[in-house]
Image (tube, rainbow, N blue to C red):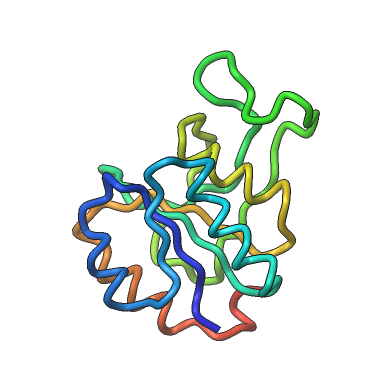
Length: 145
């Protein structure tokens, strides 16, 4: 089954994702727009969810943490510091060994605390979007378990 993808409004090569996949959500207002992703994911609990944001170096994130900026929490009522994010087998990019604490992290954390789906987040250099699209199209369900 194809992935559920979310990207941020500022991600310029999103058109390629919109042309290649059916379920691509563009987040403009994170809390409001993320609800659409949650609603679809709850209907299909085994579908892979992948968030994508622009970066100068392509990499998968290994964890989502309960931290936003230097001192805020994503969810003050959740004491769990981090959720492990899914890094697919033979991913075309490396894995970030550190965590981020930006809006990208916030979106991944909010999904991970609510869903059992495999959830990934990829910071993507815009010229690498074709590599990621080709890779996602090549995956089988076993690759995501």
